[in-house]
Image (tube, rainbow, N blue to C red; front, side):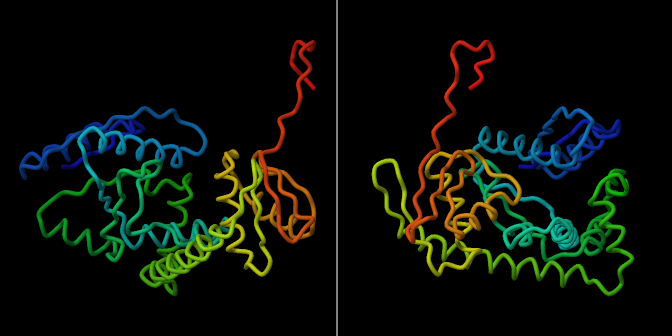
Length: 276
């Protein structure tokens, strides 16, 4: 089964999706076009990615699929790593795209990327040898988008090998798995007492401790984290302070840190705006 996501962002996209449908029909492969509506604006490619995976996830659930494979390749992987490196990403982010993971937001369906070891040029050669006319998306060369700019810079950097960069992403994925392994063992030392959670973080490497703190927030029902706030929270606890993040209050004044949901601000019922 094949699905084509039509983002509706270019006039040609509907015809391109129909072209893929025709190729699949010639090969006797079931095909479905998943149309989504995206408004132009900021963070367009990020929003398109989220909408694309949401559409694919809904399609997988509807059709009973347990895995979806995409055609991401080594050049895509190299670009992703460099984009994240420019943002100061940590080990998990620099591991870039995984060959096998869960579809975003879904544990019932896996996301497979079997072509991460192939170059774009190699795949283009296979398409040409099959006598197929590839669809060229103009947004891939639109310099308004970060990925297009990174792609252009990478093409001119003769000393940077996309395959070597993709290999580094694989090594970082292995390092991330090691961090996750260590964090899982730390989670086994957590102690729950009533509505409070205790953890003795002494001697735990910072990168592992950050992963544990992330899980603590999730376990206590805290809100979603953004940016480098988790690292700043960790450093305040190490300094022996009390600090709140994502709705969870952490107390680092003792060797065994204490965590609990932070009390919600009290509201003044007589105020028309409900202000404290």
